[in-house]
Image (cartoon, rainbow, N blue to C red; front, side, top):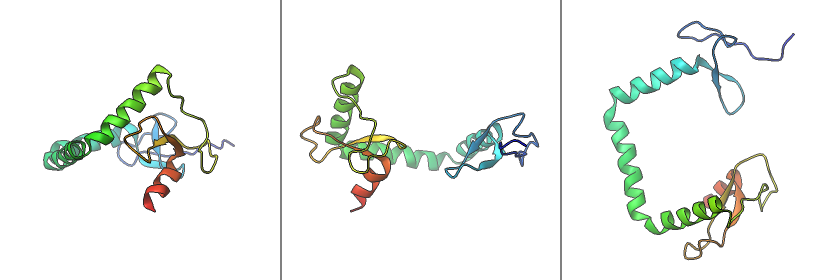
Length: 128
C-alpha cells in the first residue's frame, strides 16, 4: 500500500495520479487540481479588477512611504547576489534550518548590519 495521498479534483474529476495538486501548509491536498485552482484564481482576478487595483495601490503606497527600507532591502539583495553577504543556513535565534532565513535590520541606516532570522522568529520579533 502506498503512502501517497489520493485525491479527485472536485471540479474536473481528475485524480492526483493524473494531475498535480497544491498542498496546504499541513501537507494535505487542495480539493481542486492545480489547473482548476489556477483557472478559478485567474477568473476571480478578471471579475474583480477593483480588488487587484487595491492590492497594487497599497503596495505602491507602502513603497512610497518606505523608500529607505526598500533601498536597504535592495542593497542586501545585491550584496547577496554578488557574494559580498552570505545568507546563513540557520536562524540566529532558534537555530532552525527548516524555514526560510530572512534578513532583519535593527537600523536601516546600516544596511549590511543584518540579523538573520527564520521566518517564524522574524514574525515573532515584529509582533513584540
